[in-house]
Image 1 (cartoon, rainbow, N blue to C red):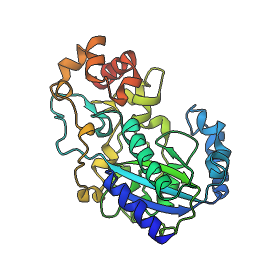
Image 2 (image 1 turned 90 degrees about the vertical axis):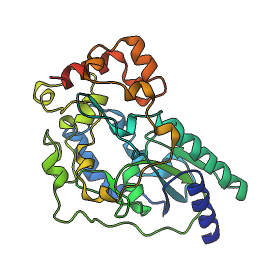
Image 3 (image 1 turned 90 degrees about the horizontal axis):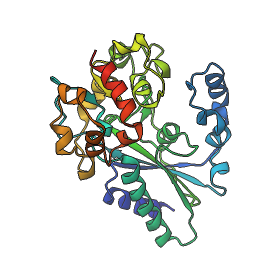
Length: 305
């Protein structure tokens, strides 16, 4: 299957993915004690889907029977030009363009179609921030990078500005070598986090994470977090901005990830005066749209303190 793996990797790169790696399917049951403890201490911060589908997350065979291999795909989203931060409120780089779920899922389906065209018996199932798969665990096993102290996947040669797609396939492909940890004594991300969400390296305190509070939290943002948002109103890139491996990051070449002109013109006063119609215009195709106007305004009020 070596030749087929090379064909799949070449097609993945042609489709715009930055990396494609393969791991042999296996049970992740050895992670059960960690995740059980995580759930028991409410480390998942009420995101119940993490608990409901735990067994499937630990065993891809339960997600797609007959899975032989797992393919990890990375797509770069590091922008060629960052949005201005002076006199502005900040949106995470991953959300400045169109919804990455749709873009990556479409390209993964193209890759699955290619696999089917060269092996008619192959079955594949694709996931982008969806479904019961442990994306970062499989990305490490596929050699894409290691899970750093900021809990994100970091590539030694390309940094961490990547979306992750995971494909389960019935093909038995030659696995790539798993990546090892290269964080060493560096704790730049731990020191930079304004809320202390990384005080225990390699373990994210979700409730203290700015990304959780500005994206997933449906209640009011806690007072002890509001004053530490650092002008951020959707997501947070601080732990990536300071990571030394991101000096190797290259800019993406995906037109859909570029911000629209309306977003590029926004400044702090514009955010404070944002209307529901403005919201629909600016974020029509963005992942921010799922947040909704009211919750974004909640974030704007908190982030502009």
